[in-house]
Image (cartoon, rainbow, N blue to C red; front, top):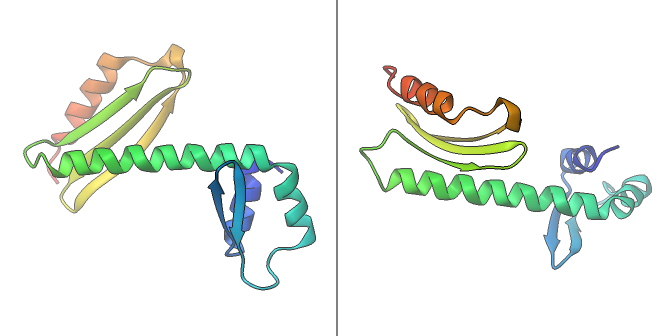
Length: 128
């Protein structure tokens, strides 16, 4: 099982995992943390911590973009591009029902900033 799969399995059992100072803390309902799952958490601790840290970065970025868009009522969207491989595009889009946030991972060799911006402009102008 991969770290992401172990994390998903633990969450499906109601087990909350939290990274703190390089340690993996958990809160689990009685009887839910089996010996096998405990062993998997221990064996894959470093990778699980990496997944949790990446989730935290995404959540912080998405929340920041949503707040930024909320503070600019005339804007339809805002986004942030991290030039890496893959290219990470975090965006917040205003819809008729609120602000939607998301993140895209695009392989570097397929990334086209102009095409992305054009599609974003076109999409955000559609009637809602």
